[in-house]
Image 1 (cartoon, rainbow, N blue to C red):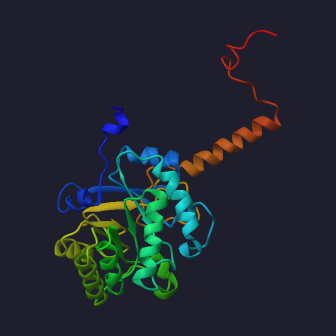
Image 2 (cartoon, rainbow, N blue to C red; image 1 turned 180 degrees about the horizontal axis):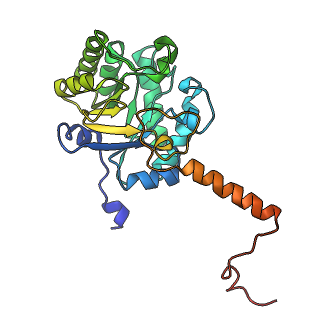
Length: 274
């Protein structure tokens, strides 16, 4: 048996069982090389529709298509042995009715090998979550700041302050009751994140929602300093790869223009003499 075959892949029930236990580490990934790096350290990898902004230069996630998600999902799947792969359902692919959601979720899973889908929305999505889970499609839910509703929300603002927290808490409970195996909470106050985490029986995954959650997720390009169009206040940059890459490219271009481009001494060591 190969080493790869001996590795047991993480499943949605495994994530569900982590409720209240060791924190769950999650990151996004959109390519095979990055998926290989993340797979070594994280329990969950999200093929997020954020790829529209960080890879394709779109102004928001609204222009992302199912075909784009499938292309990147297939690439990420090839880089994973252990982590659970969850794939975002893009805007317009699930909101119409549960039947539309099922057709598109089934396609995403069948064509990418994802272990679950993620969809955004509150209590109005509970029926869809129940419909999908009853038909064998594990669902990660998403409340708080939901980027696909950015125009309705009036921008990328903190959600759940004051009485609005009661609404989000009720949405979280409804989605958990409908069968979601985990819940992303984005950009909500710490008190609300703690309240929801303590109240629902499924793991909460925070992004800008404090350490009160059962796990954390970040967009990998934000965390590595690769995406420089804007910097979310809640993101800790563990590297500045965009800056370093820019400096390296500039140095290379300077060397080429100065005809300063020697090959490494060992580059042609094994080539026979002419």
